[in-house]
Each structure stands twice: as C-alpha cells, then as structure tokens.
Figure 1 (cartoon, rainbow, N blue to C red):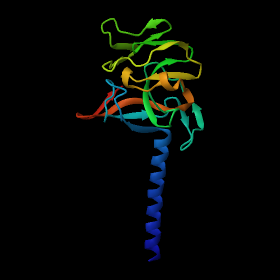
Figure 2 (spheres, rainbow, N blue to C red; figure 1 turned 90 degrees about the horizontal axis):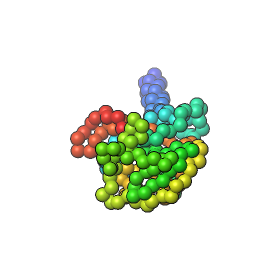
Figure 3 (cartoon, one colour; figure 1 turned 45 degrees about the horizontal axis):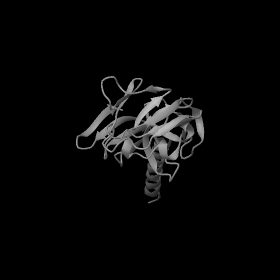
Figure 4 (cartoon, helix red, strand yellow; figure 1 turned 180 degrees about the horizontal axis):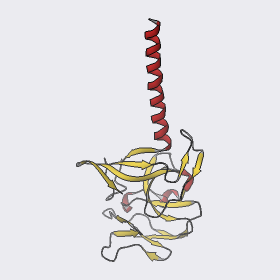
Amino acid sequence: MMSKLRKIGSELLILAGVIVFSLAARSAIADHYYIPSESMEYSLLVGDRVFVDKRAYGLRLPFTNIELFEGRSPERGEIVVFDSPENGVRLIKRVVAVGGDRVEVSGGKLLINGESLLSATSADLEIFGERQALLNLEAGGGPDMKPEIVPEGTVMVMGDNRGNSRDSRAFGFISVDDIYGRAIRLYYRRGKGFSWSPI
C-alpha cells in the first residue's frame, strides 16, 4: 500500500513539474493570442490565432516583469502584444514608429520623418522596409494626428483597420518595456484552418 502511494505521489510530482514548466515557458518564452476584434484587418481577422515570441525584446523571469536579458528594440512594421494603458486589456497592434521618429497621421495614412509609407502601386498599402500592411479604410482613417516626435524608449502602435482601431492616437505611446512579445506567425486562419504563415 505504501509503495503504491509513493508511486502515485511520484507521478503527481512529475505532473506538477510539467505543468509548472509549461506555465513558465508560456509566461517567459512563447504564447499564443486569439484575435478578438477587427482592428488589425486585413493582416489579422477576427478568430485568427497567432504565435507570440516573448523573447523577441528580452527574456523575463517567468510570472514577473523582471528582465533577465535585454533584447533588441521593436522595429517598424512588427506586430506586438501589450496591455492597454487605459484598462489593462491585452491588445495586438502594429508598431508604426519608434523612438526618435517624427510621426504624423492624416486620413489614416502615415508620414514618418516627413515621408509617406504608401506603396507606389497601391493607395492602401504601407511599406515598412521588408514588411507591409494592407490597410482597411472602409470605416475611414480614424483620428488624425499632428506631427509629434516619438520619445526614446517608446513606440507608436496602430491597427491596420485605421478607422476601427483604438491605438496610440487615443492612449499615447507605449513603453518598449511594456511589450510582452512579437506576433511572428499566423498558425490558425478563421475559416481555413491551421497554417504557419509569417506575419
């Protein structure tokens, strides 16, 4: 009887270890995110699921915001996950400007350091170096923004659905330290099923 109890105890201990390890990995290394709104159309649709790399901008101690290793800074065009400074709701948006950039928004379209990001071939496609965003302007461009310099250590975030996104135009710039991770892959597309597409 005693040996059976020891065996059960040992198995429960292993199971608890696996659970703690899994939760720690999800907290500090990688996670997933379910797209709850239309704010990132057309890149991400309601019901899509994305894989989030939590090491992209530094490694944190699991279950805390204590940074163990500093990572690189977010770049324009990357899609990031963070908590809203207004109400703590977890959001997913695109980084459109970084520290030192002079940013302006007119009709939902960006000017960075005085230059438009629009593609020469499409009035709704913005180019961020190697990344691009096909904008959804069906609901208009949302609030305009007069030229402003993004402070160092912060980024400006916006949804690709410019007229249907509550973003930095409403709640201001986001500290780089408050970003949980970078969405790097779309692993489930609503209506199509599983995939592994870069975003």
